[in-house]
Length: 161
Image (cartoon, rainbow, N blue to C red; front, top):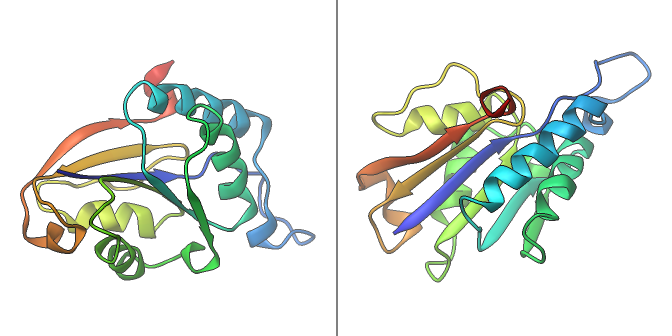
């Protein structure tokens, strides 16, 4: 069994002329939502590795969910910043088969589009702090495009309120 957890960063400050998009920070509500989702996720699953966009908002989201699990190997990747679904999908398929569960923390539209690539799954837009866990009946991440997929769980902060 291989498990993919796809998560969108938490709520950020609005875009303005003084801040580069890559450097936007979480709002206070975004920080609270990330902590809430961290507690939720810690009761559901523990990833073997986390792949995280190196943008400020994903790093902040990571720091608030990561503390709920403790020390999980994490790779910060600037290529995940606004990555296409194709890029994310390739990252998933190239994961080591010794891993069973990966969490990818990134941005829309790429994260939502990855979900929509999987038969039986459709989502318009994954909300901020939203998370989808999909389980595949396979021994290798390379095989997931050919495998049956099952929804492990879907959540976001509004559902948990």
